[in-house]
Structures are given as structure tokens and as C-alpha cells.
Amino acid sequence: MARPDGRAADQLRPVTLSRKWSIHPEGSVLVEFGNTRVLCTASVTEGVPRWRKGSGLGWVTAEYSMLPRATNTRGDRESIKGKVGGRTHEISRLIGRSLRACIDLKALGENSIVLDCDVLQADGGTRTAAITGAYVALHDSVNWLADRKSLAGKVEKVMHRSIQAVSVGIVDGEPRLDLMYLEDVAAEVDMNVVCTGDGDFVEVQGTGENGVFRRDQMDALLDLGVLGCAELAAAQRKALAA
Image (cartoon, rainbow, N blue to C red; front, side, top):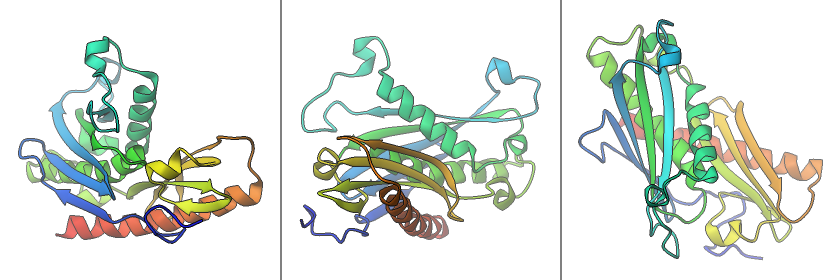
């Protein structure tokens, strides 16, 4: 079957990375994967969590949230509910883990960088768009530290690899890249792939939504994920060079 937006099975949605979207944070990026839009900001603060003090190491962490009407129907703010949901915790931790894989924490000194990823509009792939955009925001915040002589080393050594992520899945028996919402909810297999710019894996999350999946199907999805991440890495380099 044809995809809802007419793309080829191995084609990304249009991707846009708009840097310096917000004037206050040390790094900010509005990332768009088709109709999915996520604002990623990077905030630098002095000091590290209590358990990190005295280590000489910095810290990078992330928080993820979704605006009440980012989806088809309004969802209550988690602040009103009085607790953060399990899905939110899981995605926040995924973003933090992914971004810590690209940075030399020792070079930060005892400084922290918090990556806030807020979904403005959701049409599938919000966590992968957040990781891809947060990398660019993190890069800009590290440049900010370097400009103030607060970084132990050159930016290209401290940010020693790029990180990007994309969703893949099997819909109607076909492996597809970068699922939009209509495909995501119908997928037999759903997977998120986090890669480095060199094509190595940081994390892979895969689920058989309606049963099991075969090794050859998994290999096909991983190949699609690596292909998509390579294109996203190129988009990140272009954005950072602008």
C-alpha cells in the first residue's frame, strides 16, 4: 500500500533544523520531521548533581514534555496531575542517555547542561526528532562554553561524535522509514534507532506490536534506520555550518 503522504518506503519526511529559535537558552533548535515539531533548548548551569560533586565531571541530562494540544485531542498537563508519567520518564532518560554518548563530560568541568525537549505538534517520531534536534542545541551550548573559556578542549574534540535518531517500522508487511502517526498506530513492528554519525548504534528499541518479528525483518529495519540517520547527520552538519 502507498504511504499516507506518498513517500517511498526508505524516504524521510522533510527535515528542518532551525537554530537559535529561542533567544534565552545557550542553545535552541526547532526541529521539524514533517508535521512533528519539537523545541529543543540547552541550558548551561554551574554545578552538578550532589552525587557528582567532587568528581571533576560535568553532567548532561534531558527532560521531555508535550503541550496539551500537541495531539489530536487535548491531554492534561502533567503538572496538573501532580506526577510525571512513565512514558515521559522513559523518553527523557532515552534522550539523556543518547546525548551523553557524544560528549566528553570531563571537558565540561563541574557544569551541567539540561536539554528540554517540548513537543509543540506531534505526528509520530517525537522522541527521535527530539534526540536529533537536541544534539544541535547541545553543540551550540558547548560552543557557548568554549567562547567563555569554560571548556577544557576544542569543541570538535569535546563533541566527539554526532547523534541522531529515527523511527522505523513494518506497516502492511513493508519496512518503512520515519513513521508518521497514521503509520505508527498501524505498525506491526515499531522500532526507534539511535545512531552516531559513523553509523554505530547508541540504542535500539524494537517491539512486535501485534506478535513477533523475524531476524531478516529486524535487519531490514536496522538498515533503514542507519540510512535515515546518515541523512539526518548531514542535515545536522548543514544546520551547524549555517
